[in-house]
Length: 113
Length: 111
Image 1 (cartoon, chains in turn orange, blue):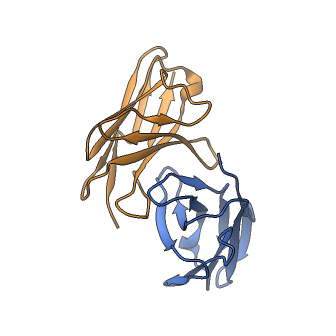
Image 2 (cartoon, chains in turn green, orange):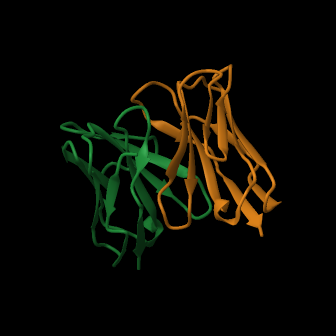
Image 3 (cartoon, helix red, strand yellow):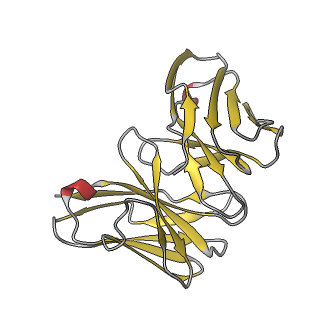
């Protein structure tokens, strides 16, 4: 299957700082990527759709000013958690679809202290 | 967002037993996917289904796209300890559109 790489795998940051997570499609171009959030023992919750060259589309209830998404190229989307707080601690996962199937990155464990 | 009802929520089985789990939705999906997720990892695609009635196998795994396009099931035959993990179904409403995930089925296999 297609390869999606996410970086970093885990990050610990202080409350009030911002954290950037990268999602790269390594062997295909992705005009669209998706960002999910997953709480322990729960399913993946779609946060937003990242669109190359245009604004991201956010799901209802997701703060776009809190979770900044940039899709600057066909192989890279970034999610920046701004002014992070402990309640933002979670597992963040990106996915991309080279065709009809979605492939996922390894996920990023964010811990805000 | 869309609601996908996945069941069972968890299963405890003996090694060698067969397993079945399913997802249902109130919406019609164009694509159904089944994933497995290990702790601390992203989901890994197991099987993709594109047509109503389609039955697809991947080794010991078999999945079907329901005729109504509102449901799908995944079977695992002759389970082994490495099958342990959380299995998610995902549905796509329209081609190249976002996917919605079921709540997951946690599988435990006792050697």
